[in-house]
Image (cartoon, rainbow, N blue to C red; front, side):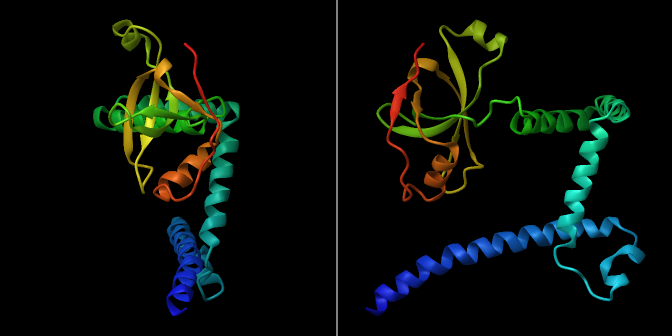
Length: 204
């Protein structure tokens, strides 16, 4: 009886405590944006005590203003100017260019990354892993390959942000009638959380 109650308590408290810890860590990190303000404009100076979460609202405001500026004519010209400047710096160019390409793919409303969950045979024939379609190989790679291929990202357990990027034949990909979120929950939970069962093969 004691063991059962103890395990039940763990099942209730662990997700709650981890959620609180993640949120607290995120808020604490975002609160560092307050350091961008002059000391006389910080809450600790104006009211005599720090305001937890003020940095979250400040970060949201900065992102919103940046987006507003970037969406008008002069903002686009300004972005083009500093991007041209960064592209002339050898080391900075490779870092900024790579990060921008990934962020544009993931966050753009027209992007198709991580919009479809699939199954592929990995790491060996007869065993399957969840993967996310991230696009198609470029023309240079397609010239070297026979048939139709897709780029997929295979997340690892329990940290889905680490994984493998593979180029897989399209006819070897099994499409899933489940969401990306369901697959992520399955991967993070090490297979404990079930996912959908409807599968169908992608045609050539």
